[in-house]
Length: 407
Image (cartoon, rainbow, N blue to C red; front, side, top):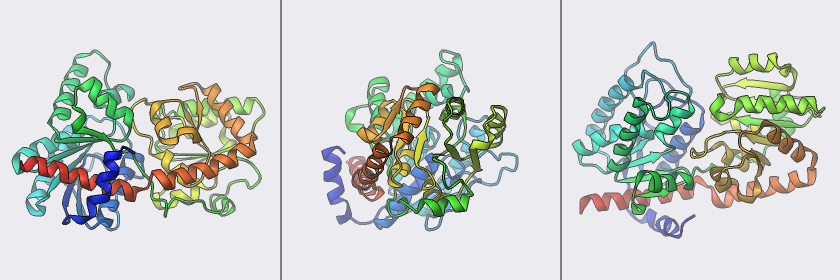
């Protein structure tokens, strides 16, 4: 953690409470990574005595203790998964008006906008209300759209979104990113000044995510008690590497290695059918979507955790939950995963299903190494990745941009 962030944290509690309006252009809360970051930031700020209100889409569920306002119901829009949608423009127009009416009543000191769409809305609110804007950036807008197959690099629509992304990045008073790789990309690729951006990586609530008895978790999920279990928690799509994971499982089966895989997330039917077609139905349990509150117990059913996410710039919040539950973790080699896991992770070549399979197999076979990593990842989560510390840092960033805006 940068030394200046530690200095911020030490002073953040001596000031009067703030009112923060969060803009979340997503169906919050839907039990996935981006939403966990929004929720845990709001919880940490509330615990520090500040007032948070989240403006979001009509879908999702309210979380206890976090005031949430929503756009009017749009009956035909039911998408809960991540990724672009052609419906977004009019949903975001509705969100702008909902956030504006809320802001006039709530009178926030700071607008905290999540994702590029939220920051675009925030730019208008900033001008209209004369309130500083913090942009919580979780990856490049154009790169995400390419990764999801929504646009092609170099096409006219790509150039338009690239231009829009530049306007959004430049317009925020300050940007926080969920990884150092993201911070570096904003400076190098987008020309953002070093004093206008910092990395505030995801964290974990270590009082909620901690080791549970493995037998208890396996009984609840009806998993075999005497077979090694590999767990995955997150959205199910090719962007998260689930197709690669299935290839890895097939390789393990063909080599005679037979761990059971617990794959938790949604949407599930496409991958359940793919698994059946590959002859993997018996060695995979698909849970579908699970409540965030159940995640700590269910993760502890595993001996090893896996994250095959292929993005080079986006955050990988599930790793923090794996770590806090004491799970030795296999992930692809990239700067974001290295930043989070450090030397406590096991790394496979990016996008290589055979190497991912070999890394999982090696870790399951080496009981001593697994036990050592399990202890070290839990310790690292507690010392370095607590949401309480992240909340204090965030408050001081608010105060700094608020002070700058008043000058």
